[in-house]
Image 1 (spheres, rainbow, N blue to C red):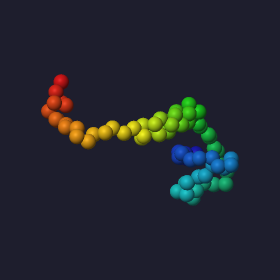
Image 2: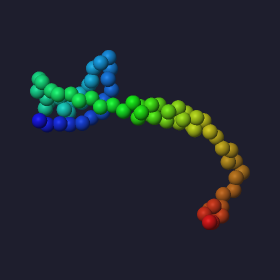
Image 3: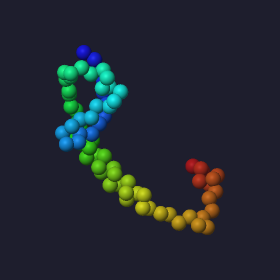
Amino acid sequence: MNAFEFTTYVENGIIKIPEKYRKNLSKEIKVIVLFDAVQKASRLEKRKSLKKITSLGIPTKGFKFDREEANER
């Protein structure tokens, strides 16, 4: 038995197999579905937080930056 792995989305209960794998499939295949509910929730939270971050603006007009001073420890 051969195997390959790919990530896809389910649309109305249908899993789309990428074109590059279709030619190697016979009529009968074995499908194993793995999903991580925590990871999905985590991605949604990241999307929400990105929206908050992108709206941040810092006025820098007239700001003088000294590289040596910034790198002092």
